[in-house]
Length: 226
Image (cartoon, rainbow, N blue to C red; front, side):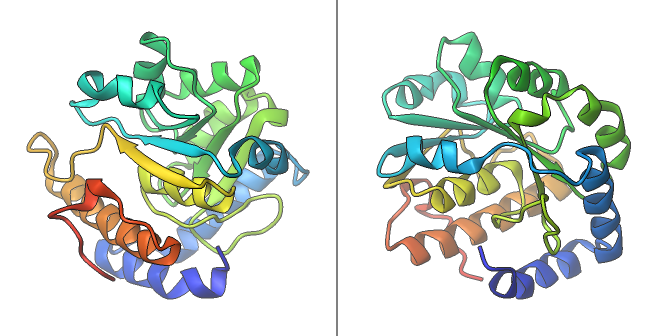
């Protein structure tokens, strides 16, 4: 994702939630300092595994346990947040975990030490989590990410929530097709802020499917162009 293309969308997200861009940038810089400003996981390694493959983008909605066989049936699995735990509990191998460390950071730490890359995301209100957990990561399997302007080695692949960031990452790495498992845009158990985040996830995935010339079944009834 070219930041010049992402930035107008990012500005709309900031305005929608009243987020502070400067806070995102401070978090990005803190993440950069925690990885010593040096290269981390080589995404080219993962790209060679993902290129031309079908990737399951696995979300953590309550329906996931009932749909997990769909993730097991495809080539690669990118899991968002606690979806990584569900996959592991069901014996489904995870190729990438995407997280902002808000729920199961210990799983992210374990994955990096087991040789599974983790995209660890910095945003304005998770600096304490970055400080607590990033030093425990194996940096060789850490992909530091931001929603603000990237500063190497911190990357911006596009996306806002853990789930849609996983989809944008799969696109960046050359996935041939994406399938969505464990997603529920109309989850009645979430609060108002989470509902708005899910709306933004739907908007961003609508944009992504248009960019890819692909149609994501998960968006049926939820397409909301930016």
